[in-house]
Image (cartoon, rainbow, N blue to C red):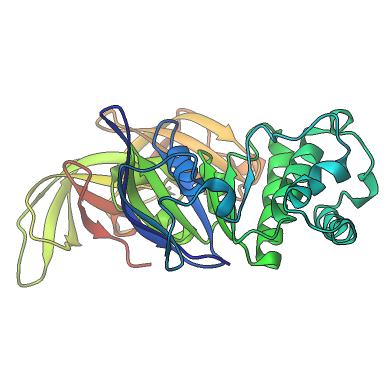
Length: 366
């Protein structure tokens, strides 16, 4: 297991900062995911860890050892790439054994370690098969076995499941998570798929334009986004603009005006002006009658049945469109399009930002 420390790491391509002041620590044995859209810097950061790129500023440590000038082959890392990078003319066994042969491991130990790795990825029965005759999922398992057989201190995975179909991705991400915990290998995983990141990670670093926007556990990063970008990228959010005034330093509360209705919320900081709410669709409630909470009239525009949940697109009385989700709804109890509803925004279960979407003014305490 290897701890990885980024001490104000910056990587340039020309004048562009592909990685901008990365400063955080990945703990030994942790499954850590770099998540973000294409071009955000996540793969660049991964390749800098591997030694394929050299950062212009800052330092990278493995434990207490500075790695800036250590060549890739001396970093004791295993890598799994998006395109598998396996040798089509070699058997499964020969592919997995390749890294051990390069390290001059004895023939007897190669046999033992390769078969152990193939058992872990459930491919031992295919040891003599040629990869070109195998499925994408099986080829990805070969790549994974080849990465772990050298017993690396650090496992790097760059979009390893993106070439697989949806069902196989779900199976493979579960297998990767199980295997990582079994071997206790520090793993840094790159993906643009938020669901994948939430499913496998101990912690997630959300990146945008070269900068780390937030680092947190999957649960915290979903429930407590640190800015509008994270709230928008992780899961689905409705963004609604309101006006905040009448802040009381005594109570810490402010009056927030939204759709002609006043709501009272405690603020983390003294603030007046426009605010931005991020409302998760599953935390908005539809009411059939007045429940005593402030309710906003609306009309159902579309109904999308998704099996375990149903998604309603609702137009509020001022023309705003919001997505509302209800779970475990029986098909015969679905609400109909054009039906009138009362929407309970449940603002106490939301996150409220300042007008720029960068500062959290209120977040739900759950």
